[in-house]
Structures are given as structure tokens and as C-alpha cells.
Length: 603
Image 1: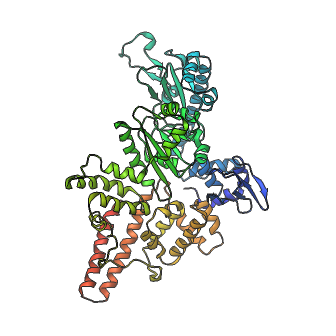
Image 2 (image 1 turned 45 degrees about the vertical axis):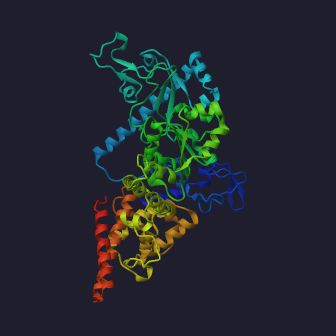
Image 3 (image 1 turned 120 degrees about the vertical axis):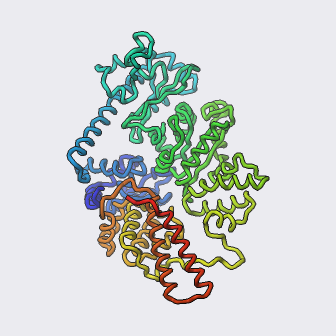
């Protein structure tokens, strides 16, 4: 945990004009400075930076925040990375949690190894680039694919010569363990056969176009290699290392950052060459997964830069399988303010060949006609299901349920329920009841339900649970918009400072969008809520790995407390009529459901 006091001190010493000014040309306009917003394409300045408030705000797209938020949103840094970056600029040391001497030594060794590994990869990248310039065959291959020297330089493309131990002339110590750890060399087993040149250590990338894989900060963390002919395997990648994880990294994201904002969406493709060729044709917003299925971490990383993602796949069976995995990865992040679409190209084309044969305009048209997530979910749920039979419709619903449940609560999720019900030939209320949801309003009398919480009740929730709810929301204010209306009302109904802070937080989010805790702490300073909020956020060791599901489990605890209190109040009335007993039974059933959902422990 980084202490809140340190964050306030850090922001007080940081000049937001200097931080933003590194990336945006700012001009004085009264007390503030104005420039073109880096978060969306615009021709006239609407992006304001306030030196007095140490805050930025775009009047066009609504982006706003402090210096920490700017680095996380514009540069793609994690919260901790942004804090360390700012601390280094102002000469502060980021305080770390208390750890043992052995653990501290382990972490220091890991940091040193990462730095050394990055240096080795950077040196190899320089060598491969020089080799490309010196090899006419490799240059001719890239030209035949329609690439220019400028685009090759932008992506740092290189060439690995065909020799088995070429890197021995680059690195003085070819037996350095870092070369193997970084995936530059491999060790052949002693009994693997082959001639003397193939025994022992050998270069992993040989006679291939080399694509450096960069982190969001621009550091080389790995490589991909493509053959110049039709031999197999066509592509090989670096192995998993302390710097590189295929499930988290996206090829081309570093180069695409500004284009993501200019174009307004991210285009996710499957190959290195697709990314480079699309950038050559005007689609610099393309990125690629690295020989693996799209993951939730990929999607989460992309949504740091844009609210719209288009997945592009081949139209064959393999492309459909890849789309299914991408849909599952995207569903938990598909809030009402985000767009996810799926573009299926003709089976004979990949994005590279499509653009080269039909042109950029045709590809742009294809993107505009991409399938929205809602339709893709319905189509995927109906795969291999004969909707003309009851059995097929039941199969469709069984396949649809986990997909639908993965969506965050909101308008999109609620609109999909009637659509799925229509496909299955059921009424909305029937499907809601089947899946454990609330029936849709009908002309018939509504089933008895326990009363919803209201702020007037002044209900006192379990203090520790309410503290944790506020702690998570203040640290992750973007989660507020992912909550359903009932959950939001439940939080508003918390008594005392908890409920007042929820109301204050919602107002801040409405006016400025989701904010970092550092920005919220500054806004809270001088208010009656400041001390309580500081205590909640600073209470206990905060685990940065907390996820949204932890907040959901906290809400289940709050709902249990609410329904238990309702049962006690109803019993205290002493009534025995059917309606009264049904309300008690309904509350007890909800308590049982929330207990089952809340069964996993929280950190």
C-alpha cells in the first residue's frame, strides 16, 4: 500500500503543466492552459489544464483527473508505475510496505535481473535492425509486402541472419544465462543429434524477419520472428520471461497509442504483419495478440486507451473459435459506455491481404459493418442449436446463460434478456424466473418483494463491511458505473458518514468521471468527510490485486444485513396474514441466495 499522505505530498510537488506539456502543446488562456485533447480527435482546443487546481479537464470528451490519472490513461501506466514515475521526477522515494530483509533482497535481485534482461533485448534489437539494412533479400521481402522503410523503422523491424550462433559475435559472453532467459538462444539436449554446429547453444531466431515486441512504455520485452518463405513454423515468439507474458501484452500497442484516440477505436488482429501492413495503409490503431487467445487482461489494457474495440478474425472455423474466446474475455468489461464489435473477413483474406487487394476504403467500410457484441452473443449462444425444436432452444439458453451472466449489470444486459427470451420462445418474466432474476413488469400483480433500502431508513450496516465497501469504491471509483441501480441504492442507504460519502462520490463521478484516490483525497480535503475517508482507505494492508468481484461479495454481505433487518422488523409487527408471511419468506430466500454468492472469502 502506498500511504495516502505520500500521494497528497507527491501531487502537491508535481507540476501538472509540466507532466501534460510533455505530450500536449499547451497555450495560456486566462488562469489555465489549453490544448488539443490527447484523448479524442479534435481540431479546436477544448483540453484545459489548471495549474492552481493541478487538474485537467476536456470539455469535449469529459476526460479529467490529476497527474497520476493522466499517466495511467494517456501512457497506459499502472497506478503504481505512474506514482513511481512522478516520484522520480520530483526526487521522492516511494514508501513500500514493511517486508523482511530476505524479501527485500529478493525483490532487489528481481529488479536488477529485469533491468539486465531489458538491456540484453535492446542490444539484440539494435543488431537485428542493422542486419535488416544490410540484407537485400530481407528488404526485398518487406517491399514485396508493400512496406516502406519508414514503417519498418517505426516498428523497429529487423532481420535475424541464418547462422546458428550469430549472436556469439554480438554478446561477448554467449553463455550468459540472460540470453537464454530472454529467449534469444536455446540449449540443445546433449543426445539430440545433429552436427557440431547445432549442438549446445544456438540462436533461436534464424533467417527470419524480427518484430520487436514493446511494452506500453516502449521498452523491448520480446520478439516475434517470421520466415521469408513458406516453411514452418511461419511465426515463432520469445518465451515467457520476467518482462514478457503473452497473455498480457499486445503487439503494436506502444506504436498505436495516439492512433487509438485519433481513430476512436482499437482494431485487434491476429498477426504481426497484419498490424504493420494496416499501419502502412492508414490503420495505425491496429494491435495483435501474440500467438494466443485474447484474454481479459488484453481487453482491460485496451480499455485504458479507448472505449471501443473491434476484433477482426478470418471467417473460417478457426476465426469463429477465436471470436468466441474474445467474446468471453470482453464480456466482463462491456459496460454501457463501451463498444465491442466483431469483424469477420472472407475466408480467403486476412486484414493484410484484404487491404492490399481491395483498398483501405473497403476495409473501413467493413469495420463500420462489424457485428456488435449483443448480436455476437446471441449468435454464439445459438451455435449448434436447432431453434425449431424445444431441445435446441433449451440448448441455446444453456449456452447463453454464462455469457449473459458475465456482463456487468446495466442497460445492455437488461435489453439482452428479452432478446434471448424471444429466441427461445419464452416470455421475459419466464426467462427471468428461470435464471433467478427479477420478473419483468406485467399487467398482473407483481410478486411480493421485500422492501428496497432507502436513505430515509438510516439503516446501520455492519461497520466493517460498510468500511470495506467505501474503501474499495474510493480506491476504484470507476467501479461505481458497473454497479446495478439496486446496488447503488443500497450504498446510498448506508447510514451516517458512509451514505454521505457515497452521495459525494457519485457527484464527483458525475461531474468529473472516475477519479483516482489521490484526486479524491485532494477534493475531500477540508470537508467533514475527509477524516473518515482517510481511515477507510488506509485501514489495513490494501491489496492492489482486489478485483470487482471483491466489491460484489461485499455488497452481498450488505444485502444479507439489509434483509435480516427487514425480517426482524416484519416479525416484530406480529402479523400472521398471508401477504406478511410471504414477505418474510421472500427475504429469507434472498438471504440464502446472497449467502451462497458471498461464500468466497475476501483478502
